[in-house]
Image (cartoon, rainbow, N blue to C red; front, top):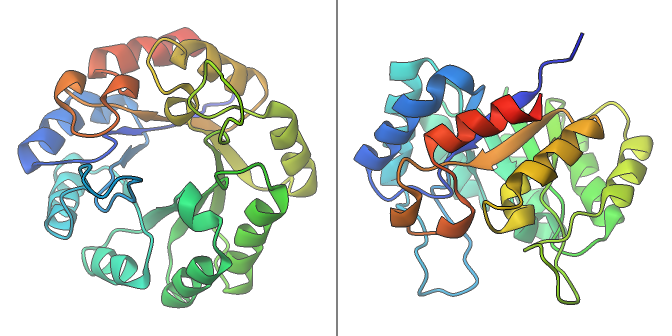
Length: 243
């Protein structure tokens, strides 16, 4: 009997409540958690940085209407504070944040005593000690409901991937921390929709616990990472294909 995998999906970032609602309405029946970037750490400050604080209200409304857990990325304690006020209880730590122990410590301190779930993405560069260190910081802060996310690593050479999947490094990570769920983020690994299927199948074959897939009701109109987002119908087909 095949173990059910966790399916996490939603837009890279959201620019309007209507956009988020349309996406959630299409996918809520076959996902476990809706993911949505509200505050985006962008390489270029002129890129779309997410809708910001107002979008927390949108996530709250969507969660209530569809009875669906929602998750968002937090990079500073103020993000945590604003999200907690709207009863958001799942947060992920981005690759740019995982790489900085000072940021991780600040977020840990802001979450002490809270009943939340934390997902820690691997750092940008393939330093397994940084990844494990971030997880240990959350554990020391008393946060036990943790997951790791493999989103690939910065490629030092030309690659067909946006971020290289280092499967052997993930295997090593799982041997060191065997009791933590590892989710694969094939969207950030692939950088496009063409590789999503093969990366997702590889992750499931390796025994990873789920997938985090960027999904938008109209990918071509997405304001960030449009090339790697699938439509709701494509998401449904992908889920059906991996089993």
